[in-house]
Length: 252
Image (cartoon, rainbow, N blue to C red; front, top):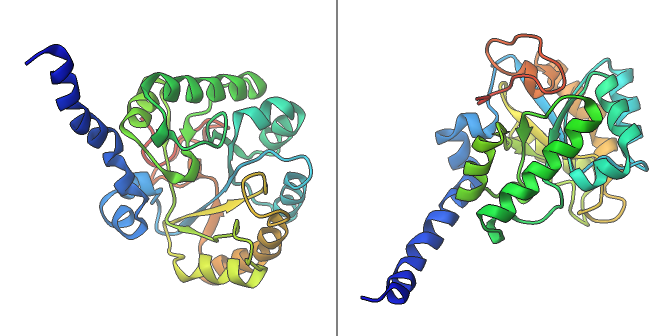
């Protein structure tokens, strides 16, 4: 068999291996069999996370709300947005929030090869790290879709992928504060990780208003259940008080 024929014969297997981690997008399966990737942690704690920022229009509202509640969270930032708003990134870090990355651009990693995936994550990590003075240690892939290349790149870059156990579906056009609240709390459990969005850059226009409206009752429900709310770095069974790039479930 010629080299070209060998390559053609191997392509389906290579494609399958690249796409195999997509199975982790299935929430119930992920929560049962991949607890570290799902962001499961202490039974008395809930990790609060936000994707797609920073956005100078919407993110400050979340900063003020969390400050009023004396809470911190983990923000998975898009590198391109962070580079355009460095002062807002520094404000997030200065307020005690954990800074993580969501890639450079919000594009599915499944459609990217190994080099493009590595370059995207490295660019985001380096850009955000240069702003806050330390490299972020966590990343969440756009759309929550992992690939083999994403896993390899994360290991090479000393990044830990973390997804979520419950979300608000707050990006939808028909979402409301009530629907976001119901969707989050229907799967809310101690040790879980909540996914919300502090920006509408990849969501329905203005959808962040629904997230902001749902957040106080979500936090109230956590309090009612005696669950502490905080960033992923405080979510592990044992923590070391690390800063913006600190420990979390699955940190390598």
